[in-house]
Image 1: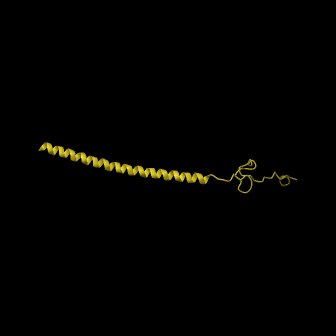
Image 2: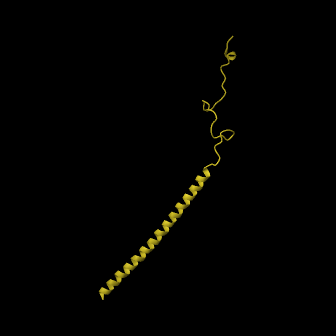
Image 3: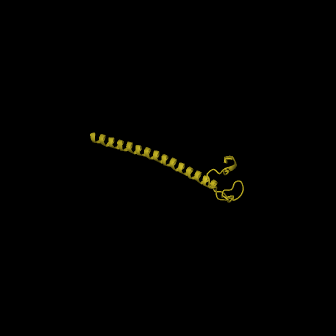
Length: 93
């Protein structure tokens, strides 16, 4: 009788363990599907942004919105008009 009980317990524990493994597999499958869906959404968003950032028209070379500079930039960081020393103000008579 004890042998039958032992076998029953082993079978019950094995069945219980199989159910636990099936539950873990279902949870892992769900996580993988969520990760895959997020990755696909990220790739789609990246493709949309990439397509939107590429302009069909060439860069403007002249006008108010020119993206290619026409001349060299000034030598000074903040160009301003400078005047030489006014000799008539500083001169002594």
